[in-house]
Image (tube, rainbow, N blue to C red; front, top):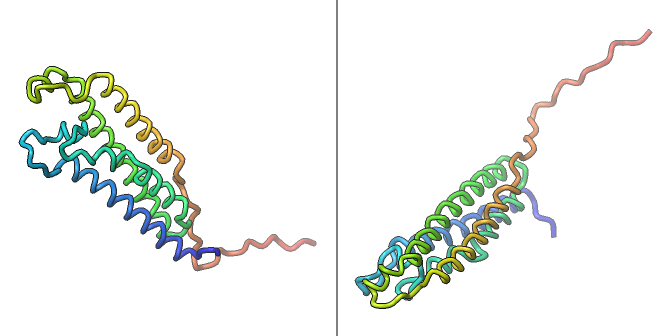
Length: 173
């Protein structure tokens, strides 16, 4: 089954909307997570230490990485398709910025054993675990960066509805 330009645009737009939703949910879980524990803050949520710790699992998953890439791949070379590809690039950049901030927040919490010991009475995430998580987060961010680099940067130009004048060669004698 071959999809027409309009169907491809709609499908690419839906995939992009799903990616935006997943990224927005992860951002909400990280910044505005709701927990009854008074120790629940953005650093602990970023580190994922059993309060409201779904942000890392939501952001560093296949959906927010693959959906924008698939949307850019499906987008046709017409005007709506080029707009979709531009929006896809913006979504990828937003993913990278949010991902870097989330990964660094988690690493900051994990590297601060003294703070964890003072505030929690025990170390939830030691330095080794923080490094491992940071490396895994870097893999996801690298995949998103690779997708951003290989995205179509220039679509073919739409043809004008007016035909170009045909150049005729001079008559030959």
